[in-house]
Image (cartoon, one colour):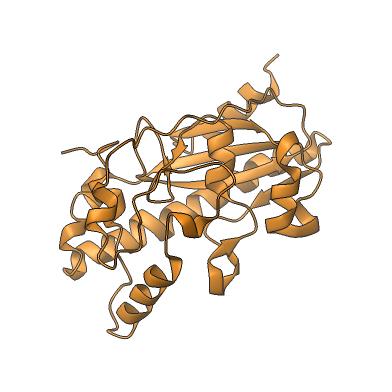
Length: 236
């Protein structure tokens, strides 16, 4: 008989999910509740799922003023992948619920605090705990296989999974390519330190205002240069 971990892997196989990890969240309950409130409280385990953004899209982001490039990134590199992840997270959640385990899928890219770009759960935090990658200077999860070129989603559960608490050490070291390429200087070039605030590494307001200025032009609000330039996962 397949273990729960392997059963979940078999379920997601047909959805072409590139990354799956199982995180032990027992030591992170305060952090989860602080961000997501009572709805996320009490789940000891998390499942992290990730789908890579095609290199054929990311490699052209420096030309994002071309509407063909920006359209492909916004739709196929963002919206479609988000929908796929939401679907597979719902399928996994339904399976575990039917097995009698309290389970909660967390929507991808949904913000409960729009002013500060804060979600119900930090998908990158759960992926980090699950050992899928490290938090980079660009404040994104960076995986050894695809760098930051992926979209993530999380499922919280009480199911007795085989989980880990194994965050990868950062491998950005002295690289500052993401800080150099950021068009508004929002990335400060600091390595991630456990427990420090996002603002130590990233000026969200600069990034937010940049996207707001793009909206006024009527074009797709697309940047992604920190994904493009990261040497981890760079296809060029």
